[in-house]
Image 1 (tube, rainbow, N blue to C red):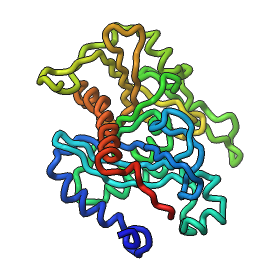
Image 2: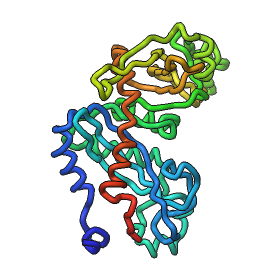
Image 3: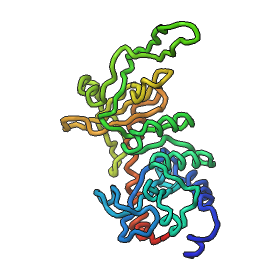
Image 4: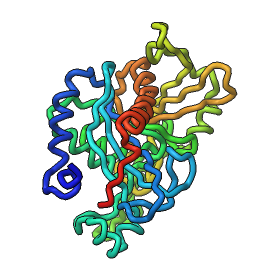
Length: 309
């Protein structure tokens, strides 16, 4: 079994694809969740192992990091793929690469890049596509959001209150060029106001924008509710370099009753006609990945993986 798993020239993606196409139709898929998890290690020889931050450890420690995408449904979940994160340090270490049999074609990729590749691969399978969910480490990555949108995949991704946006009222106008002829300067759309951080925007608008929305059924059958607001915004990242105005997205903000400030923020490219209940439900659905990781590690021994190559 060890030789088969580690050394035989077989494509594990085919097994993942076959499993996903068999299981996904049975679980009523509602979303795809991307995330990463750590595998603590004592030594230095396993591929990708180094001192790095791990949410599993809650601190920086000696570990490997795996990026995964799971389909989440009302009747269960199904893995859509895993990728081992290799740091730049590992990718540039020829001796370590040779010892752990890292193929030459493997180059450094960020965790969002690995996640995007896993999502795009699964999108070509015969399974139900669903909105992509992810935490702040993925949501703050503008390139990931643009890549998902360009491939016509929907998402609801967490972001921080420091992310800058333009409100829906912002008007973008193209100024008249300053010169004429062949040396005519290119012009870009200019907003009629400055962007503002999400935290400042919500503080300015105040709690009157929030309403109570049910986002899922609780264990006792009662509907679980919280206070949310839903605004149309345009992300301001690198807007000066764009030849067109930034596209509109949903900004979803949760401010639970009894808290003195909002607790969570999300950006989403779901259609403008999407109902608030669906936006809130998707925003709060990502927790299932943590249950998956716990079961995979505790019940299926993923945390004891001992591969050296």
